[in-house]
Image (cartoon, rainbow, N blue to C red; front, side):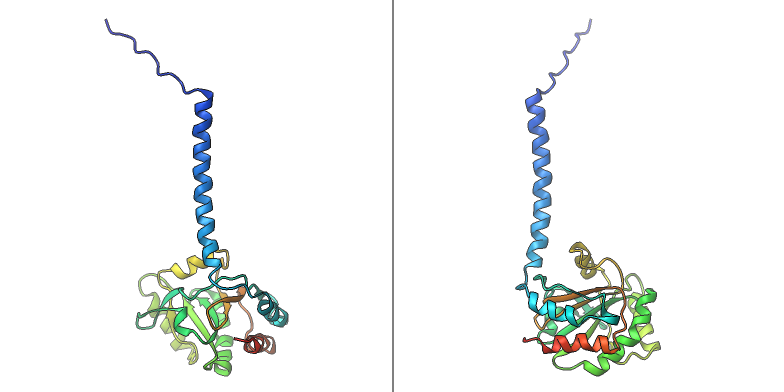
Length: 220
């Protein structure tokens, strides 16, 4: 004859409540940790509302979708590579205000925007300003596709830099700075964000030039 095993006692209501609260607390702690991590990145620079407002005021017409931010996000550590595969960061361009454009050869709006960016770079690239394109053709042969596109269209003023791992762009997505391509960041000479543009723009226009001029007029 086998003995009937007594059922294990069910946890009391108080114990169930404590377990529930513990799980909820863990979720809050994780969410807080994620938020603080993003907030830490967002506070990499001093907030610059006046500079962002100056860029925003200049962004009219063809550049009306450009939004001044200046909330303190910094990208000095944002990593990518040059055409030879050498690791680089935004900090390598310290001292230059930057128009950082994320693009891919498979992105139709990106392709349409490139001639205007090349023309803008031809006019304004200098010791103080640079159009910095970062390609996102990831996977096997991605870099070759990007190079072929630039060579085919003879964009002489747009060098090839690449984020083949997509990690730099993921950082922008995690901070809700960008969701798709093309995406453009306007950065000051220390790699601090002043404005963000989602989508393409006609940069080689008086409106585009006004934004570059407003950026140049800011005190470094």
